[in-house]
Image (cartoon, rainbow, N blue to C red; front, side, top):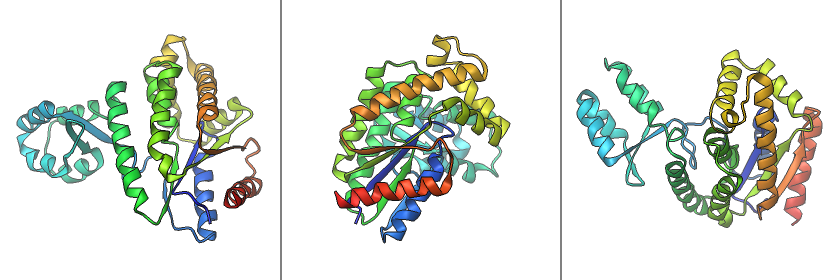
Length: 284
């Protein structure tokens, strides 16, 4: 039996994280493990905020006063956290879709997205949610599988968005590692030998809106802006720097971990490698 309550799947965009997480889920189910898979973008993620907005108590009171026509909806969905309130953008949108509300309302909601806050506040909110998840997971019979929120999100907001130092970002991830230590986590890092090829492949396969937004995010703020990144070449240069940082983080983490090279994008070979990983961990 896999003696872990948490499997973490990480890697750069286009490396095959989603495929790896889904394969892992299927392999563990075949091993009779009760799993709960959370892919990137899941609004119900138990340890991260996808589409979450945070307002301090003062800001929330002002929001209620300014948009009194939806006060009952805001109060319904507000969850008190870290001296303020978290609102789910997804749940708000569902409840206010038939109410005529000014665009300034949504401007406020988007501007308070947890991944648009200061790095310090983001760290406070995210570590708080990981702590709550770890407590819940310890009482659960399930093994959770998370795609990309453990290393990717701290690196993205720390290095990519704010140009934070390697020490700051590593400290952020290590805080999360300390929180989940009791869950006996396993980290699977999906690697790519040719980063340029894998990212170009992702750009070709995904909608143009994705690549445009991705390159804008990577080139025009934080690390990319500091280093004059432009176009797809600039984005790849930032990704290479991100890969170096993630490699340093991976090496520094004192948890069960393995890197799997997915450069060939061979589904059967990749599945066999993942199965070998779990067979080895079962024996440990």
